[in-house]
Length: 266
Image (cartoon, rainbow, N blue to C red; front, side):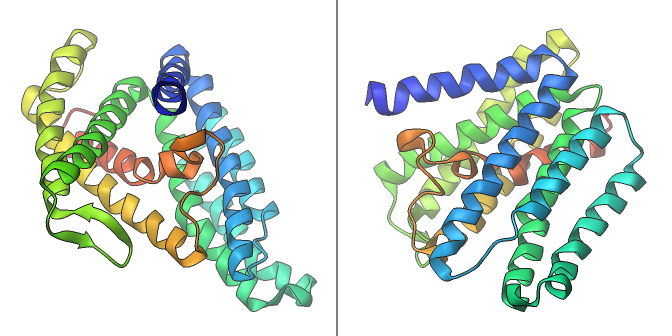
């Protein structure tokens, strides 16, 4: 258990927050690297359903988005770049008819999820208060995921989505949501010395963002179930792959950003 889960988990935490807290560039590059690793993972598992994922298109999008964020490009340029890359998914079929419409549509879907969400997170990572937003979003989501796991094992009786993720229960989801509120209160105490949000804002944001994170986890599980795999990869051992760690974050972090804006903190 120590070598297979605890030690890798500690390493993930150190690397993640080391990159987030160091500087703006390391934050953005960190999420870009995760996105590129996710390109590889999706390319690999989609082969199980005879899909030739056009990995060059999302990879180009990620690299271009990285450059745009680092040079402080306006949001209109980022949206234009995404639109061009989405169009490229379909245009490649014109250039290479052998690819087929099926592969083009799957690549277009991949551009919408997860890579558009990666683009949003990269943009968030380049903002002025990104370190506080990311800390609140990541820790509340991780706390929710862990609490949901333990609550589900201890109290779980009613399946949440048995056809998608048979081990998830309503009891676990509720336990995770309740824990996220407590995590929000604790994070307020930690972050207030750095100009963080108020107590109510932290608690509400943690609850809403982590709840969306659970939905993101189910969405990612649906893709895995369809492809007949347990994890996106074994890149980080029993923790699975990058997408296994980021599936909930890709939903919760943008929602965290929106919540803090709605509460007037941003």
